[in-house]
Length: 141
Image (tube, rainbow, N blue to C red):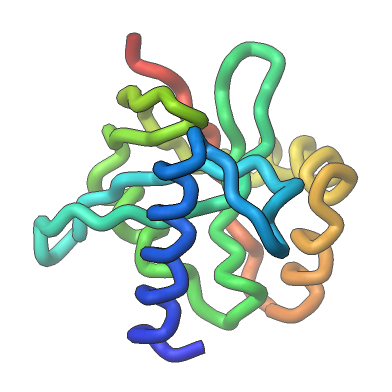
């Protein structure tokens, strides 16, 4: 999917998410989604991307930078690394979080749980030679 098509697709998901209290239909109906507001590392422009997440028992959220198994990290990965204090939307709530990339040991421990809950993550990892980064999002409040 080219950049313009992806932006249009994501905008549709974001609009549906917001119009339906954090729920969407279609292929993502059973997928927990989070809207991640990220600030462009070079541009300073805020963008919003819908991502699947894995809720943690301590209230944190896990997201992965798979980009569908592409050979490069998604643009938002670089933006979170440059500007880790972000806003997210989960359901009808909007709040601030700090995004932290897991180190290799923590990622290794988390990865089997991610794949158990989202088998596509394992498929995406098999499609690329890069290690797919994993982030933990922690509420600031």
